[in-house]
Length: 91
Image (tube, rainbow, N blue to C red):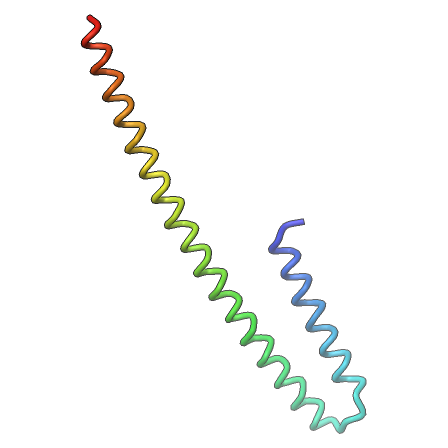
């Protein structure tokens, strides 16, 4: 199972749990709607924060990977140049 599907399932499960809890609480309709609205606001805020965190981590991984790839490219180019020079010397 992918992490994305797991995260989506966790969010849906948490939302369903909150809604079920609020709907079964002994409150008036107005209080229940206010509670649902507040919980939805909190969930949205949490989701936005997690999204920002994941985006930042993804960008960091991208930049780190790009740097490693560039370093490997430079090392490979130096190795090829060195091998060519050695080959030419042997002739």
